[in-house]
Length: 185
Image 1 (cartoon, rainbow, N blue to C red):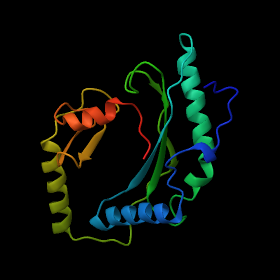
Image 2 (image 1 turned 90 degrees about the vertical axis):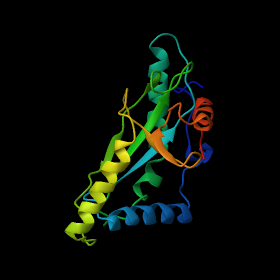
Image 3 (image 1 turned 120 degrees about the vertical axis):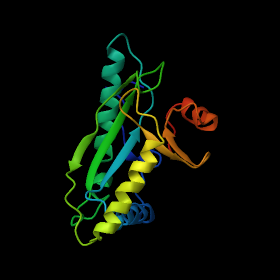
């Protein structure tokens, strides 16, 4: 794909989560997090892109151009992802992929902040609930090894029922799934 000549349109994108049902589901998930008593909540939209090629740094340039074009093509969908009065933050990470390796070492792009997270209001919790929530978070994260590289991506693995690094060798089924490259669902 030549990112300088190929138009990128939302019509050719998979899994934009633009339907009213998907938007409603995303908004309900955000509301659930807010009702848990989190101080601030944010949505991270990841946009996976096909690998780009090129000579030397041209590959990274092409990957960046593709990432920018897909993010621009998604602009209308992203602007309606959360309701205007929502206090949740919104970040978008259009990951530029470079052929020949995974995005942790052969990728481009940075998460972009679309909306800053405001303090969660309307979902007050007691001090006892806050203490319990913080204790549960510390307990969960204490069982996960610290990251060895950035960005640190953790997942709640539905296959092995544990939280671990997205590329952790502790779950071979997950490794196989991620090693095939970006997957749009």
